[in-house]
Length: 78
Image 1: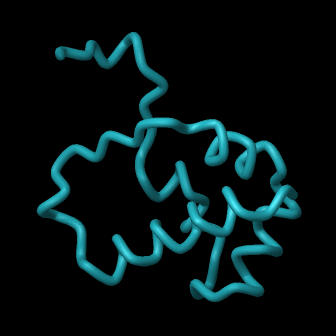
Image 2 (image 1 turned 90 degrees about the vertical axis):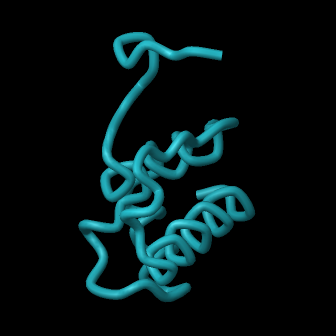
């Protein structure tokens, strides 16, 4: 299946999960970020497929952080 970038809502992974606004990734800071930005939490919850281009450029730590943020957003209704 092919996707054209102008037909999907494309953004950086950092922007998608709000990482740029967090000094460090822990439960308290993620919940606070999602509470302040409920639209970000809704975007994450509403995402069915997350396509990551150049996944080999991500560290395993960052990938774990993204997973953690997405799990928190999907579990908690902010």
